[in-house]
Image (cartoon, rainbow, N blue to C red; front, side):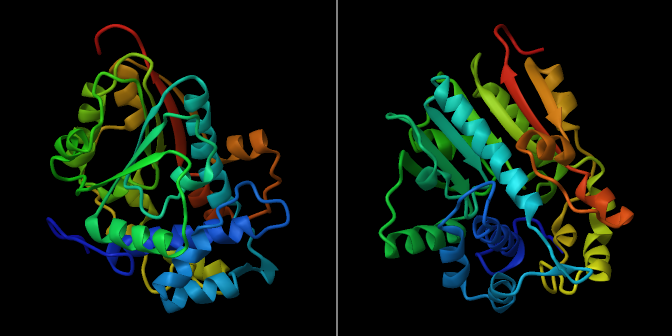
Length: 301
């Protein structure tokens, strides 16, 4: 359960969910025709040495005896990859990845010259990430600046101290983040983003409507899969379930033009044929909405 001001590293609490995401990015990358390629993901998992995720990497879960294609993580990752590449291609040179975790986009995407990528996350998470990348001689393809700060605190000040320009159009991402923030912190997050986003700025958001309904997800996974992808933890137990503003409504009401897609929409866009899933598992899988928005000219509503 979450507590006020709690902290974590890569093998505890919320950090474990970032490690799980890296595990499934690694599995997606190992497919014959992957949606994304993340050669760093497996390096992070092996360096962390967490037994469950090492086992998942070596022997992925199966559904009714058939290999479970990690397409969900592939879809999610490709959505954010394409968002950033589109924004960069249109001339946005300032990028902010909120709750960056083990995201390696600064290293694996083809960024135009002059792009600066800011990664915000907990200090221990960034320290682990930096150490693993350095040990493997990884070189970023953009200027990378890490911002070690909790998103429940004054992260805009830390971002400014790292050199971010509040007058520059910015591409923001909130991937796998919002349920792990208290409602007040989530609402403040969007307010801060709005204040730091001149016209032309963009944002991509993974939104989970009625996030509290996901609390039984681990039990459903255990019912149908031969092993729980996240082991003994239920990620939803780390969620905050207090009231908060719906991100799509907030953005639409504050000067952003918003587009929304469901996982099935992304699958159709990327030409991925999804396996048949049991109804209750499919209902959970289809819950997220993927939002992309552009800041309109003129004052916010």
